[in-house]
Image 1 (cartoon, helix red, strand yellow):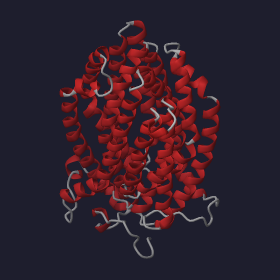
Image 2 (tube, rainbow, N blue to C red; image 1 turned 90 degrees about the vertical axis):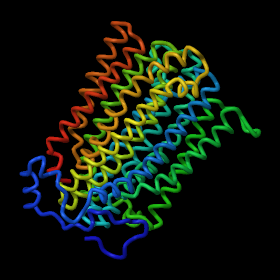
Image 3 (cartoon, rainbow, N blue to C red; image 1 turned 180 degrees about the vertical axis):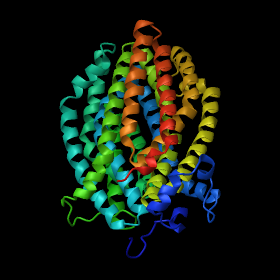
Image 4 (cartoon, rainbow, N blue to C red; image 1 turned 120 degrees about the vertical axis):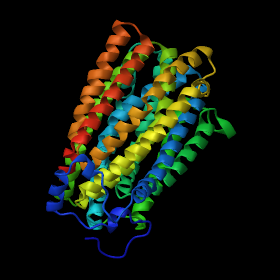
Length: 490
């Protein structure tokens, strides 16, 4: 049980005032019909649950919005150098994400484990989880940095698929190599963020990532065009600015866990001690998640290669639409943070009923917000593309692609949030299988048929992307509705 004085900034939630579940009560829960499962315990209200969800989600939503906004501004500032610069940055993104997935997937295990520890009111276990996670990602971060730097150019050439000019490949290689130099800082910051969000504390990461984003924009202005006497580094300057922001974010995140002011605390004592129980739990969730992410990244890379072969104008326009779509990820991802944390905490307290109550309300909120975003994207589609490029051809094609972006919003939010619920429960093997079916089986293969065989170009690419997202949403919803995720033990 949780011992000692309550740490600052650890706010209680509705779940905390409920009695612990038992094996008998859990068994009784699985015998209930759908109507009975919707009934809340007598001592709580739906309003209280929504308050808990928003308490965790709003900092994540703000953080994700600001991060997406910075990415948008980043692309606009780079776009001032021409469509080639946008293509150079975009083509470097997929190899970077491929390596990032190695530690981001393990962070899924960290979040699930910490949320269970929080539900069990076992703070010492939460501290041991973050300690072991940091050791893990330190190793992965440095190995990734070395390999990524060495093989940056071959990866960029592979992504270009003979469809982009040598100048774009050269700029993309510069951008990617600088990104890999900062990989250790990115890995440390990400695992701390995962642990804090697992404990239900999303506000610290909102603060330090907002500061880092502001630093990123400032250095973008200084380095891209060489303002105030700084060297004009163009695309390389944008990458350097991003790296400096990651150092700032990581430094503040480190302070958070060493200060003792938050639920998870890091101490140097026994830093390298091997904790078999904790490591096995992280790997149980993290390895399937890693496989899921690698499958997803493989499919996205193959898909991106097909689009890049359509030429620099089509590829730049495609990435403008993808960049705008990524801003909408914040809806699903923000409420997914709440869902992951609250589901994990509920199952840690042996309350699968509360896990379902929380996750269902997360999905409701996410859906309504997604519909509003879809309408705005449809109405303002030309204006949004105009922010990135003033070329008439790009605006015309981009506005057409924005119709697909708008259609995707409700499905995208649904699969993010329910996927977050499954990950909070530790059900990551299934999501890996879903990625194999939808990303590789639908987006990549259907994309090849529509782009290469039927020659539908960008229209075919976006039909394949929509088919992937919609299928994934329904498959994940089916898994969630069956309820097996509530029986997983970590």
